[in-house]
Length: 450
Image (cartoon, rainbow, N blue to C red; front, side, top):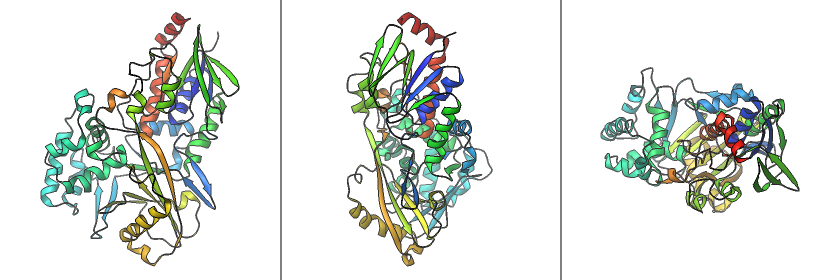
């Protein structure tokens, strides 16, 4: 019996997930990746004696499909997952620190005690947050009308003060959505808060890698793909895709790859350029309209320890989240912190020297111990197209994994997963693309096309 030949274009979380699913089902899989590494936008690089992640990627306990991928890759033991949600939140203005910490009660009561003691909000604001959270539980993210609304407008309609938005809603939402509330779809915001905090008590427990992302994802992916019999071609850009009777022809460098089915797990602009006309029910130029949003990371190396937590959230500050990456980076002396700045359109083109002058004093204000410390190194990493833009109405620009072109499938966090652009969304898209490809209906569609 002839095995189905599958070509997966793109070696990020979505593409690797799809490739492994298809290989496990007995397909002959070839994966083509334009970069020298696997892992897509989750990668590491060497800088002197440091291993540096391009961005600070965390996950939640509710990210069940991402956790399943880590199991499949054999690296689930290389991450830390909180036994119980605990987020220190510090005001740079007053120095006060509150904690978002869950208790042992079921949702939504699990955060009641924490909110009651959240001193960064007034008692009136705390009560207002509780009322809005209960209302948010009933919002239907799958309703197209919900996607057309902005989260900021919904918060205003539910009488959330500017302080509540800054110190709580955007504290969580900006990091998860890569957009501020007034620029984010209500549907995506509702998904984040429902799935992560409101529906299940333990869903929001935070996890993070204890090793560089290049080890957690890239190296482990290469090993798993090889063990599954997947042929991997790195540094190989696919610049053409053509349907022929019963097959697809991919122009990949000087070579041509022939496949019965293709999974495009590439950025949306690349997918639109490669797909034949009519493959998705979207107007020409949809990928530009979907857009993208940047993330900037400030990396600071100190000669001593200045942060006693694995991470810290900031309010009343230009900073957002600060992570201790000392051990994963391989640093043996001092401390290495990474500051993650999401929704960073106003910062992504700013020169490193200016970012240093603007943000380093803010970090010192947030961390009093840093005042006596010596800064040994500062550098910046930028992901200009870190995520799609989660703006109101973005849902109608996210195509499904199954296209109208027989044998052609899409994967990527930007496809119609119902999730924002997260690692979980990427893995879910890869699973959905593989499931559509492997379904009995898919074989029938390819046979008809032949």
